[in-house]
Length: 367
Image 1: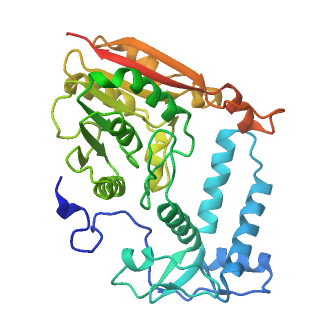
Image 2: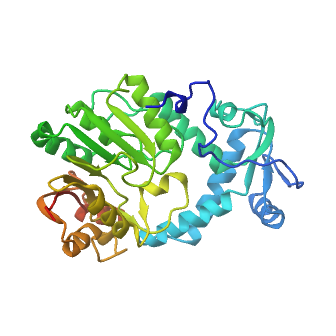
């Protein structure tokens, strides 16, 4: 692994994705404590933004009021309406602006976010949308505290803009399968590595060499730093690339936890959640070329999109039915929610009641 890529000079790589910031070119109206929220909303819409002054709690109260107002006007009835409401809220709340001065949030009682200095070393006075600031602060808390997963004996510290799973049933399913079958594999490809969790599960199960890829530069940086922290440089190679990257032909095992929901993402981490209409066709076309005869391909998926009424098609099942190169060796399913809500509290609970996680084990045929 090329150590120059991993912060060797003390600076973050320029390629990393981070929230865009801007100088105050326009004179935005100011929001302070005590200002009528409806009047503030009108000023914000008229001028394209509003600058919060005073305290951080003041900004949070206006932000929460606006989100609740939008949710009340657009009640979520299902996944699609819920997502539309969230997108509307994101667009509107991004007009709430906060000043950052000398890498500190220019509001009383604001939390320190060390990434402000790391991400914008040359910017000393700028504006940033409040949702981006909140996202950065939340990501910093995860990064600092770390996340425990049941399948590995150490915490992971995902960097900003990196997708990491918050549910663990599919990870446990993969770990249990690997506990039975993993000894036969000496090397593996971890496609779309994200925070690296699948690669680290494979490493903890004794697979000696792991090649990870991800199109997100933040994921590549994050996993690379994690590998160094754990002293696993001799067992991993990580590359920013789509699908299989440049590691060469896969002779033993390739593992992929693809996005589970068809649609278009709107944030950095959405590449781990949503897939476009050509995604699986492209993946299986590449897999046919990159997997050697006899190699194993493991896909971790869910029927969430079907249960949510977004699609009637399971793309893995569809691709397998059309392929002459892959044979189904094994399919394992389990309920996504082991302890269902009784009674279901809403539309999401009803989806979770029927959602199943799937582990597809495919074999590359000798064709």
